[in-house]
Length: 201
Image (cartoon, rainbow, N blue to C red; front, side, top):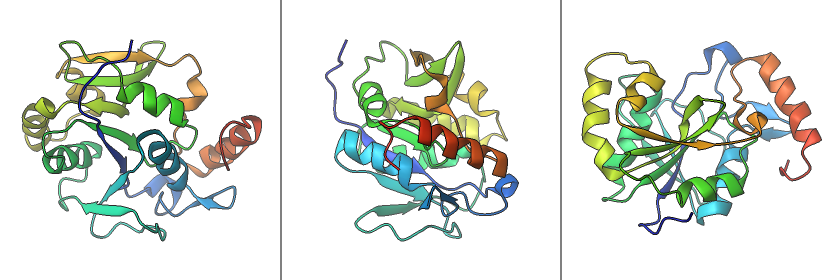
């Protein structure tokens, strides 16, 4: 069922170091294109626009017309970008997508953006009970509790987000949630993209 609420701000997270990948995730080439361009294109297509949230020292490819929001240098944690985006969204929800999720289609972003959160503060993509909290819609009210958990320590992402109250959004095809962390993952992502003609490459 579609949920009528303020259109979320589309956010692609790009503040990670990418150590296991050997460098910046955003700029690593996947089938000839920077990795970040895949989720960025999906969010733009679904919502009409997207911003990138990154660290000041994050290496990014040239992204014409895309606004970049600089998150604080610390903590280096995946949720820092989510908290920063919520703080700049002027009371709107944010639809976040990690920059290392190249197979996320625009249709899935659109469905998450329109999903009814009920009493939850987060609607997160999920497959077989396994949440992907970095592909999720965060309500404005998530800002304060999420910030408190983040700055209290170094929380596990799923545990921190789960404590807010999450409504899972089931995704039947787990490959859509495949994220790239290693050179081997990059090779697999390339193969998966080749097998999915509906995903632009």
